[in-house]
Length: 84
Image (cartoon, rainbow, N blue to C red; front, side):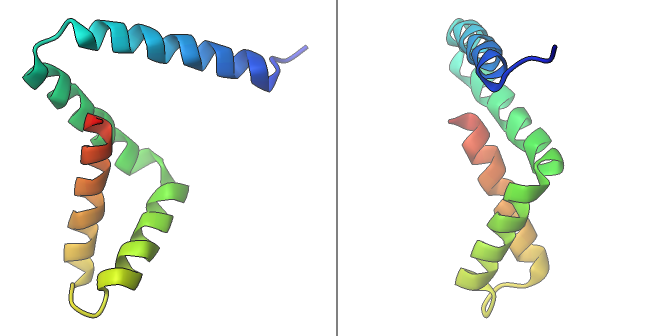
């Protein structure tokens, strides 16, 4: 029998709590670097949300920013989210 959503959510919750506990013990710069790394990783694996971010940034800034600039904005957005 497979795991239920609540079991998976519980495992994810405790994993995040454990990682947060470790990060609290790191110097701020190291924790921020880790967060940027997580954001960079998510930029490449989170297709659904990345497409939504592209659509939103393009809708807001598409007339004044090139596709390359929009990509850079979305990538920076992911890194900033990772640091939070």
